[in-house]
Amino acid sequence: MDEASTRLPTSEASPPTPGICTRGGGGGGGDTGKKPMKVMVAIDDTEVSLYALRWAVDHLFDADADAGASETRLPGDVAVGAKGSILIVNVVEPYSNPVYAADALSVPPTEVAKAVTKENAESSSRLIARAVEICSGSSATVETMVVEGKPNEAICEIAEKIHPDLVVVGSRGLGQIKRALMGSVSDYCTHNLNCPVLVVKPPK
Image (cartoon, rainbow, N blue to C red):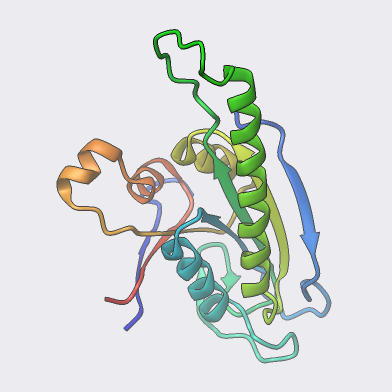
């Protein structure tokens, strides 16, 4: 059974220069009297994050551009089900060169960095392709953004700049110890963003 939790703001409602690519969609057109929803979904290379994206597409937007919109609304008269947009954000952590003792047979750090950067770019490209495919049946306009940075901080910085109506993140279901050691992106977002945050948990 799908599970999701939403945190609404209690008071008031830099990554590298991002490249945004618009992919199809049926946003805009027609006057429903409701504000189209702008949703930002953060994804990584885990199935948990892709499940969160799929949940958002299935529950927040009409499958057909001509379908009637739901009356469910977010703060600001934003209609769930109305035509809108989805911004898919993938944050890639930059390569950090570990320091080892000198080794005559070791690969030069610059070569390692180039290889890692290339692999990260290819992985992001594959991930974005999967994400766009998930959104292909939605009436929403889809945009994608890939940036380098620390995921939790980059997600919040981007959200502060674009002012989405809702930020969607997946939950990895970390235990207390792992949360303390690794940190939780969803926890960070819910505590630091002023817009509504939807944390989607995969079915058990």
